[in-house]
Length: 143
Image (cartoon, rainbow, N blue to C red; front, top):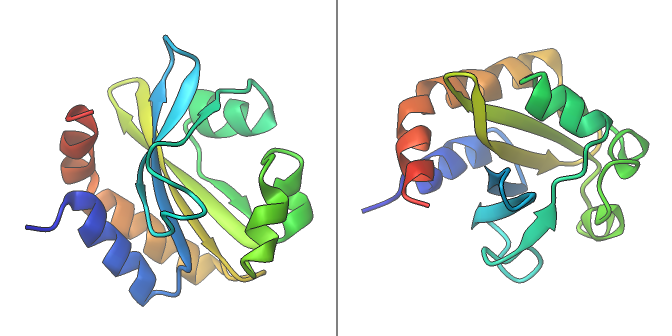
């Protein structure tokens, strides 16, 4: 049976996403953990990265707002793996926080070619996140 992550990944792929990951926040350990990936070689599920308190963190985690970068320079200053991202032919991303109560449980991370996230597509991805919110929260609770 497909997981909530599988179902959301398929829906986002239908709209043009080329890289899809889900990360969960572990504030106590100071880490973001990859819980799901469309690219297990480049971005394995076992991967973690430190939670860096920067502009991205302030916007997406503290502010609980969607981070949108439609060009590489917009995300390169925050993502240490920007060279890998661009080597995959990707040049734009959004990170949608998954919030329960007042806490960000994790983020939905969607990447595509440069300038992919038009206002219409951004609204469509946000609508998918809203539609699948309860299932995502339940999946994230599994650990």
